[in-house]
Length: 154
Image (cartoon, rainbow, N blue to C red; front, side):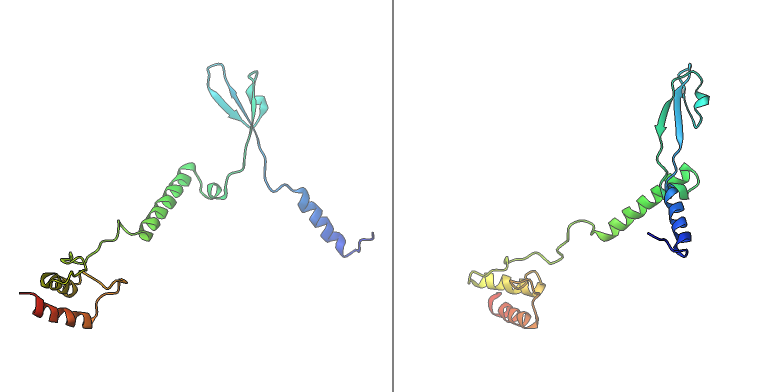
C-alpha cells in the first residue's frame, strides 16, 4: 500500500494524538508512621521504612475542577440542590385539590318528594351539584331550578 505525500502529515498527527492519553494518572502512596498518623505522598521515597500502599486516583470531575477549593465546590453543590428543591416545589401542587363547592343538600338526587326536589333545586342554584359528566350547570338548569324552588319549596 502506497501512502501519498499529502496524507503523511495527517497520518503523523493522528498517530501523535492516539499516543497521548486522555486522562492523567498519578501515583499516590499512603503510609502510617510510628505515631499512628496517616500520611500521603506522591513520592515513594517519603515513606521511609514504613510499608507504603499505592492508591488508585481517578481524575476530578469537571465541576470539581471548575471551583477552586473544596468549600467552594460543596457550596456550589448545596446551591444546586436548593435550586432543584425550589423547582420541584413549583411543579407540584401544595396538598390535595380542594373542592370549593358548597355542601350538597340533596346528594344530587331527587326521590320525587317535594322536599327532595326543593333541595336539588337549591343545590343547582348554589353550585353544589353538577351534571353527571362533571360539566357545571348552565343558565337553563338555573331557570328550571328557580321554577322548582317556587313550586316545591314551601
